[in-house]
Length: 82
Image (cartoon, rainbow, N blue to C red; front, side, top):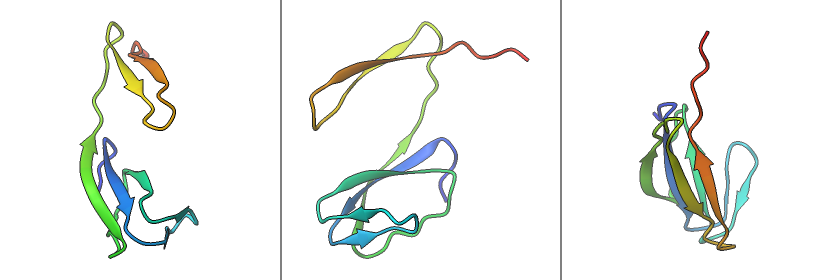
């Protein structure tokens, strides 16, 4: 069971089609985001469990795309007051 702030980094060991109809070739890497129940099939390897963390409005993080090399800034947002 994955919580809403959790995700799994997955890697296909063989050709794989998930419940959403997405197709993955051997070696493909993708994320399965929570909240959901997920039981990996034998052709899928769980690489790691990841957990999200909130950024304050004065915080940010740089992310690099492994394929393109592009770097982008993700900024924290001020919480909406209701």
